[in-house]
Length: 530
Image: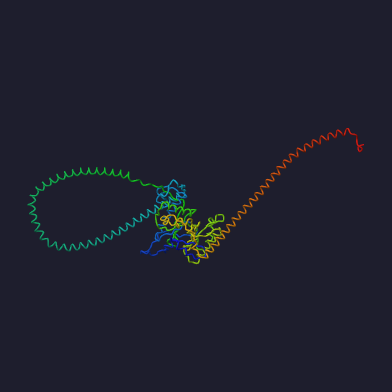
């Protein structure tokens, strides 16, 4: 495996994960560098440079194939976005030549979510098509004018050369002929007189013979013409019958070409250049670049084909800033806050820095990113990219820019390399044996692991104590509730029994009072009364 020899390159106290990128394998070429095959290597990629604040995708290309890699990658990303988010159908046949529109030959068109085309975009597309047609017409006119000028210049030169040659030849011929003519004038006169006399004698004899021969030739020609016309008509009819039979056979045997619907993505992609020649950037307004990159890799696995081999690696970019540690810290907090939070389960991550590995600022960049992650989620820990971390972060130092890439399933998709993924298929993570760490780092990692285990055990024990306390309190409250219910029931029964006894005593008292009043009337008065 390519990555195994690089395990011993880590020299920092922090846990840093390094993997091979295509930039390290092939190197960077400066603009206008002379190619090894002779001549100067011409650049055909995008002209605008990347700026801070962009999001999109980072492409590492082969030297000299920048434009092909960019076109192939943008086509792949558009197909993946159509598969995930849906597409807009074509409105007019003129737009079929627009590179934003694609033939849906990579999936079933019935499974695509269709979006309506906004009126503003329709007008814009029509204006763009009209401008393109005008540019094409102007280019064709300019080409025709240039051709006419070249033809005129060539014709004038050829005419001049011909005239000069003819004049020279005419002068030479006239000088030679004048001498010859004078010598042959006397001889010709004598020969002509003798010929005229002989011709007059033979003409009379030959006239009769010539007339007979001409009559015979005309009769033979007429007979030959009739036969040839008949033969031609027969051959023509047989050829037509053969052609019709062959057309019927070809139409029945050759299948018709399947026509795929043409659609475009609802998101936009635009290519930019960086200070390094074979590193390109594609800006996009896709809400989740990570999901789109994974969908692109799955699409490559489904079709098992790469149209161009220029793209060596495709990574989603979540942030771009200037080479400043304060800007990096602010960007890291803003970008990584959704991935590393205290409410989310603890995650293992891997941080890698490409370019300037031996520089003094590399360790500072790593410290800023790691401290930001631990501030967001203290229980997160680092691991090697070979062991398939939950989140893999790659920071590219390209010129004066810091480009932060973030992916998941780094080993599963073969380092997000289209060529390796198509050729070798899905990858498998390795076991982390810790041999890539130094003794001090291994000791520090073991201490962190023990501290993390103690923290987990303490948290587990605390949760159990809280659970027991909740159960005890719940039982106490249940007993108290039952006692209250019992007291209320007894109180109600007492009230009911007390009311009946009071009624009976009251009736008894009333009867006794009545009897006492009746007896008092009959009894004699007491002394006090007297």
